[in-house]
Length: 342
Image 1 (spheres, one colour):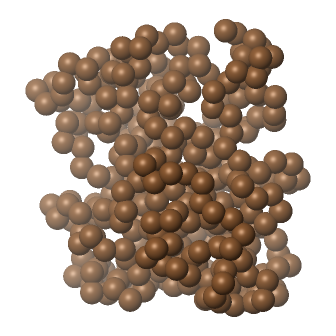
Image 2 (cartoon, rainbow, N blue to C red):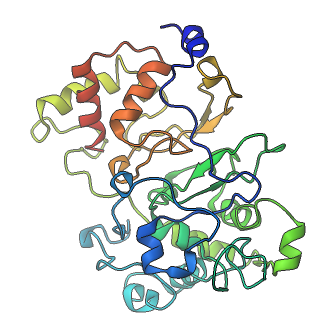
């Protein structure tokens, strides 16, 4: 079907995934994380994606300064209580201090000590690494704080910080040009949904710019997971890959056109692109969205900036429709097999 036909029949299978709340919005955490940290339980909304479609918990931690160690998490979730024990021999003092700040709870709109909080018990708020657990993600989401007027519940999925050292723009919509800027703006916007008045009431904590580089240095240490089937240039090693994976790679760099926005070796182009989904849906388009890296993508479900695609197979089908690729069933399976090698 042509895009206009799909829109007329309301047949697009992957509409945007909205935030379950309009006015409140805010961060929502998965059950697996709430069970470990009850302070993150909200009384006004429940997490709405089944565990089967979420990343593993707790996520592994890979440091590009110590690749020979593999996962250094020891199966634990980094917290303010264990960070020094787990990381003091792996990071520099500056990086360790930055990591401590990323694990320090800061006042936040829904999780706070004031009477209008959205939790049963008061808390000190949330830390950067409550959302980016172990520098990765477990599919937490929040209402976009950057869109005005807020005409629809634009959900933003929490993305991984793995490989952020190699990215030139940050934030799905903001196009911030440094990790330092992202760190500062994220606290100012996501923590209070971009509202400057409510922080005054709830105790906004100003982070001096002098400590932001320490936090950025810590974030810049998180690496992608190992990809044993890739060469140093990011392409498949024919001696290690299956026939299906090799066919998928050929499609990725050919018929499927994935490499236009996701070139090797890091599978991102540091640009923003507009897929113009308003061609298919009776709702406003999303506008330009940052290209996210595909390295380690199998560990980061759900997919797309708002989590609308629950599996890699869904994501392949999404682009098959949006880019009008006419991929066969076998080609879609091969492409998904290749993505799982990254």
